[in-house]
Length: 511
Image (cartoon, rainbow, N blue to C red; front, side):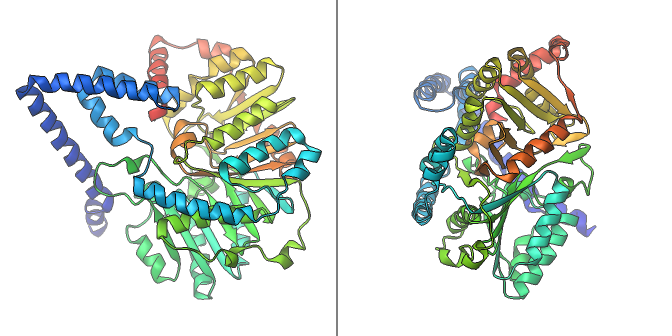
């Protein structure tokens, strides 16, 4: 009975009821106005036309504009209301200014890092183009003395991460989109609690929406009582707000400034297949040891300072010089973040760089294949130019609707020569690119609009690192477990499915 009452009066229940009530009151007001004042509808039509002109004029993704133009022009009353609440992809002006201030501070901090771009330019000038872009657009330094290890499944990522967490002596930084009660979080939580009790600085960031209804409502309070410092990103409040659009989708772990992890894995049991969901859940990550970890630390600390309002003492979190002496050079590594607040699609641009500059192959893992015209063009032109472009997607997806939308892009890709696979054992949640035995990206960035334009994301770009060859080998093994999609599969569809795909493609940027 206590559990039932807790569910009934949980924060999620209050949030849903509050939003439903607000929507109901707004709709009732609009209906009354529409009935009593005929001019009101005319005014809405005019406002819809002006809003449509604004959308067409402003910079931004064309697909996103089309997805909003249809409801705004067809149903102006409701379309305007929806756009007012969900159409913007920005936090408030005050929040943007604070984020800008914190970002500027950490750009200056990172600018003190030794510039490795000239060294990369000498050995791989074609790859240095991406490195220069990331330095300019994302303030991300390029590092040399960093060892990389690719962790091709969640179980390997988890075991390695636990081992490194147990070694922490100075501090632990963790940032995740999802924390879900279960074995994975229980074991991590135990280590964090013990380390905090031993005097280790432990900081944890999690996204409120991503973890909503997955951990106890009082989790933040309990963690603080245990000595673990917690910052919750964008806490949900019981009101209609654009804040729903922007989420912290990053996955970052840093131990003592010397060892770091990133990838697509959250703290939830399905990621290590401890709790079956969508068949076998395949996700991956990378472990960094050395200078490159500082890039992950900088991303974490900038988010921490933005949420908490603090000014962290950055020197405390730098890598240990004595530890760096033990690290061998392993190519080049460039951890980078992507934010929806700067109108710069960093993640998509890096992906397109890799596709457009590939000479032999580009191998892609993505859970969601929801691509805009620019990405579609890049992939098809590369394939038509003789590049071996392959994409692996899940056969059992965590969202049936999103899977149907992803499949709607198969035919144009296949016609151009792109090879598309579905991972038959279950769900592919990995977000990886590897190209020409030279460059690779692993991180949190999906091939969908929300990830590329609306969420805070992170990844590690690597060139000439050991992880690159490891990623290629893992990918080829993965393909052996997949079913290759053919044009016949795409064309053997019902009229209903074709109509469904057409509708989903229109609204793809909003899903």
